[in-house]
Amino acid sequence: MEQLQATNAALKARGVKGRIIVVRDSLFLRGTFTAADGTRKDRKICLDLPAHQGQLLTAENRVLQLAEIINDTGMVPALLPWDAPVVEVVEKADSFTVAEAVARLEEDFWQGKIRTSAAKRTWDRLVAETNRMPEAATLTMDLMVATVDATEPGSRSRQESCKVLKRLAKLVEIEGTDRLDALRTSYEPGVREIPDGEALAHLLSGIVPGDKWWWPTWALITYGCRPAETFSLRPNGDGTARVLSVKRKTKLPEWRTALALPVSITKEELVDDMRGESSIPYDMPGARTVPWDVTSPAGYDSIRAKQHCDAWQKWLRRQHPTLSLYDIRHAWAVRSITKVPSTSLAAKCMGHTVSVHHNTYHRWLDQADIAAVAAALAG
Image (cartoon, rainbow, N blue to C red; front, side, top):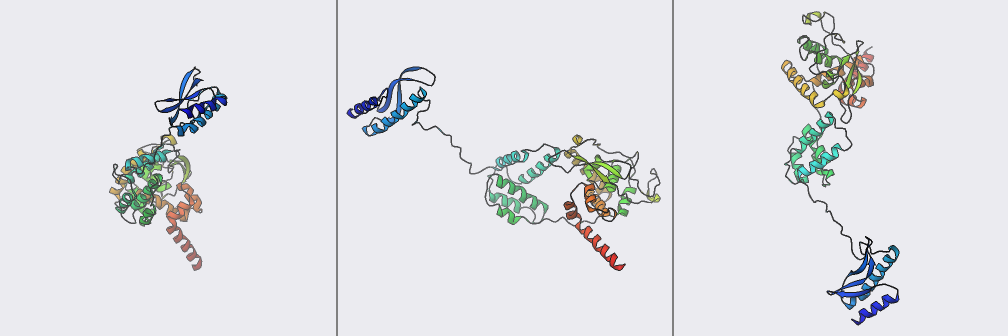
């Protein structure tokens, strides 16, 4: 090929060692070159061009480009400049199954968290919402909307379902979460009748001290802690007690001080083997018998606590079908409105913020404020 000879002559004139040859209808550069492993020998380097005279100018440019690299480095590069690197393209999945999306949610949920038993229970509650959908189904907004729509409007289930599925949709980038927002209805717990001190004293008078649930029930009434916290509560003998705050999802529980608000009870109402005080004492010497004794933050297990509280609640329902353990805790808060001068102190003793205290007990706080104004006006 006359043009090929002219090209090689031009390369030689520019000091390039080697010449362009044709091998099986393709253009190669032949010469003695050093490879990256240090070996030097006669080589044929593919220019990745067909043996056509229209490609000679491109071939010449590629040889000059390669020659410059060899002069700079002293060797032929492992990757020739005209060879595009192979890039593995990972395409974003257009869809996920429910199981795949939940696996991503689990990874996201536990990132940066301590695997406490309380956090495990929180995760279990999230899974309970995702379990409403078939694992093998493709996760779509239509499926999530149908799942939420199957719950009762205005219920806690509807609220939780919307919240969890919206989080799942955002995580796997499914659009249309406004459709979930449209289904989300406000949830207001039913207004419960909170037992007064007389009712709680009557409850205690029917339990024999030493029975399995006597001491936790007394502790719940007297100190207003969470039911699960009674297993750690230890009275100090001065109207206060040391108790673990267990409402901590990402950290171990911490000790706080609880305040006793004993309920009054007459001698006639006391069972035979109790002392005949005019009120149930706040220290209960010698009477602390609990089904599970929690002595340290590390010893608390949220799952085990729930099992005990569920059994305790069943026992309470047999005594008083309409009463819940949290009704008893709420009763302490209501009593505290007239007995504890500071709302923030009452909230601290109960182990939650002032904001939570006001949001939970605003009905009774408002009643107390109005009653105080009425009393002042009457005076």
